[in-house]
Length: 604
Picture 1 (cartoon, rainbow, N blue to C red):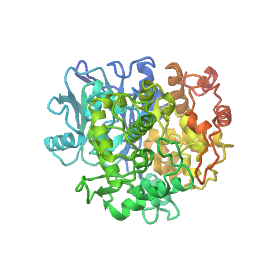
Picture 2 (cartoon, rainbow, N blue to C red):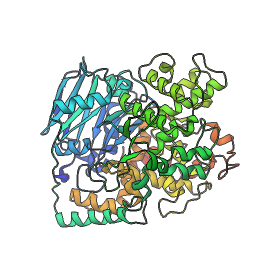
Picture 3 (cartoon, rainbow, N blue to C red):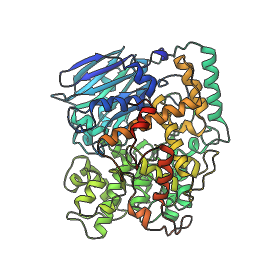
Picture 4 (cartoon, one colour):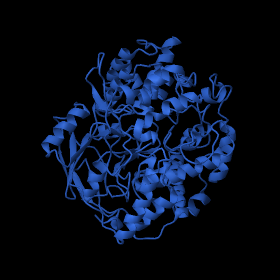
């Protein structure tokens, strides 16, 4: 496995004609856009910004980064990039586990799918070759069953399966791809694009292989420096004392609740009160935890496998009750029953749906029901059994589920009340209320894939996870901070390293490993410059797709309705002021990238 040749081994799969052709990425694209996220956006731009996301003309890219599958810590990630059927923007989503690493070990850097198969198929990858196989008997099956069947069919050991479930087949606009049962390309509706192409799964068979680099000793030393930073006991990623290793991502539930930034009941309030403890990482660790599985080359082990021990879902074993879905299906729906939250997350994993979008769809409909705005069956706050039933209905587009399968933004508009959808560019907000965390609100508004906590994870600064002082209630200075975080993460997503690596590693660590892997010079300034180029490429695509001035917005609830809870009481999001700062830092004009900026970055 020679990292210096990254981009050479990409297979283009024409599903309409059933053809698989190895076609290297243009070297200029790899040099400018690195890989994974950045390279995928360039492929999506090539397909055209006016393409219908669910048409055969859209492309669906599964791409590694230069470090995927290497010995670099937290390098088990790969990206799915396409035009989103939920938002109409370019979207990318990232997945941990082992499939991306095995794709690299199988000798490939990525798969680019176009067209539409006449009947359901899956792609089988082994020894650098891709073949299409009949998936008719798998169509309609859940992801858990699909994974089991395909792993048994292809040998089990050293086999990874990435698949869609009924939600993707039925083109639920927030359908997801899952690998190995529970690691998701979660956001943006990538699973619906798979369903529109009759592509059920990707199966990769490959044994672990070591990287080959020009200077093995220097490569080993660079990896050691990065690993030492991750293992530093003062860091949240530390396997010894770090909150991520002990409690998983849900370590944030009580923290965010305490500062008045935990949206509750469709974000009508900013705290879940004492109930937050009942769905927190601490509660899960004490009452439900059974194992700590991990992804390729990860020392952190933030995944927390749990088992429900009593009640209607006793015996359910799944992984894991992470922070974002625990919030969306818990606090945001006024549901403090952690067993039902686990059940709902497992349903998302089996049907192939984004639990963040699902929780927002349910909470929006709960508010609409309470206000008498629904024409169908009502949904009551915190009714766990009804939430479970509605989730099945959404995946199969049955009854009211057909409406909610369009996503909360479209569904709320259909009900005549778009204002109760907590969404940006059509995608629902994650688990940080913009009234209690001002930088996160700006990050939602300016995210190129719709509301997202991961484009600019300034929560790391606003919650004190990284040694950068950022008062969550201060809007001043957030424009420059959000830009910097967006650029850094655009680069790390293109390497492709786990987002949590940035809690310990900086641009210098990324630059050193990237340079040694590819055998070329790179420093921290180049890392941020490449990230800026990638972020501007995404924004350029969206501008061409019709997202212009005014597209960077937040729901009025966040800008006009002050928080009433301790920690953020009286606060709203000062979005206008922050956008002025942000656009000045970016050199954009009301959210549009000027041609001079595109030329200076080498995009056009």
